[in-house]
Image 1 (cartoon, rainbow, N blue to C red):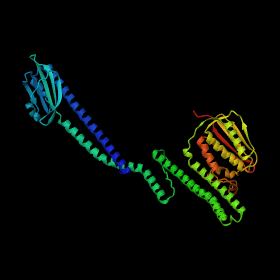
Image 2 (image 1 turned 135 degrees about the horizontal axis):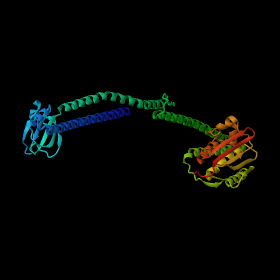
Image 3 (image 1 turned 90 degrees about the vertical axis):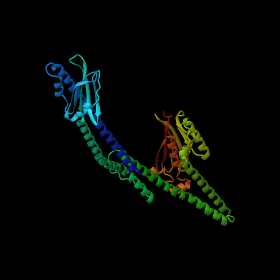
Image 4 (image 1 turned 180 degrees about the vertical axis):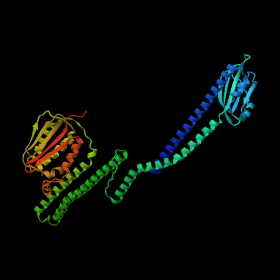
Length: 451
């Protein structure tokens, strides 16, 4: 069953059930109150007759008093303890009551009875008779008019319920349409995306706050993210294909050259081997970087409190020994931070490797600390980065100067990986640069574990 039909069915059934319960409650409460009222009224009449008999017993015959107080649709009688009666008077319409069996009651008694299909109120009140014996003054009154009124009320409520079902069904239909319309629009939009292969967003006309508007905004936000990720993926695949095609072409050309003329010219053979070896290394590094970026969500971090100055000094010593570059470390030797040692080493090696490739002068590392953060600043005096390229340097495969970067062996993935590692460590990177003056990379990281 479709959601629209479910909403329509459930809301209709709910409204109808509530309407039936409400009208039934009205009917039964009104019926109870009316019958209780008839019972109380009859009790009051009986008490009045008893008082009148006691007051006027000496001057007016009891039978006359009873005849004067007989109900219009009922019977009144004086019943002795031996169930005999000398005074039983019935109205013209209720003569059948004279045949009803009598019962003597020791105290006051009242009830609703049904006799030969007619409803009555029966009240019995004890009193001391003239001869000193105890008798019951009993009055039986028909309540058929009240029953007719209650029955009429039941019919009216039934018709009201049946009539109210129509607007209930219509309103539930309208409600289901209002709820389903945004969902239907969303489904149609997703079908269009699936059919045409182009991302689309919902047109949100309602500016009010609500779950449906929030759902639409969430859908649009999700589509925006999917579109951005899809575009990045397309760009990534395109750039990766381009980057891998070039070294493969170089390797293929040099291999073909070696096959044709390598044995005749040893110098050409050596040049080809060097080129193939260099491109193979670059392809391996690029592939490793791509795999590292792809596995970034699976990184298992071992965060701990470490001496940042000591770690930076060890990295600097290793870097100097490997590349024979002038590198100095500045700052307090007691500066600490909270990070994963291996990931932080990898991050710093990326920055230092870029500084090595694009500068010839000394490289400076400054370790500092603020109230809440630890900072590592790497400064080179190289060729720098143009201002318009700074926002793009963390994009995958982006290189400021394609020819220059290729000559230096760059793949455009180093800073992308650096940003991913920094995000994993809970750190952030600031990069400033001026052309022909140098570049400064500042890493802001946690000083201690957050509580």
